[in-house]
Length: 57
Image (cartoon, rainbow, N blue to C red; front, side, top):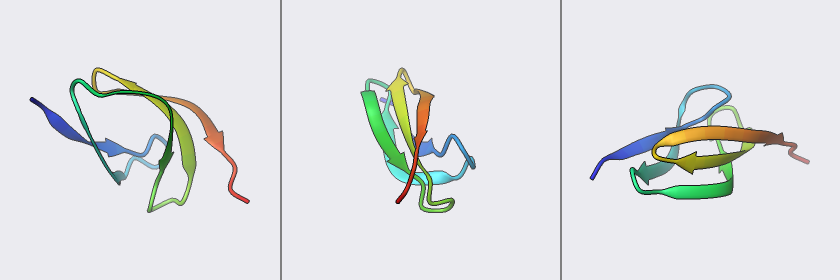
């Protein structure tokens, strides 16, 4: 089974999350430790699709 790191869709850096090839996520808030941005993403078949960027207060 393939396991890959999840990369930030904004800056492209590695996050602290890993996904397997059978992982399915919907409306997952992905936080990047490097650029400090939070993005809603959907993940299926190791493909990450950004939905929208969330604002930080």
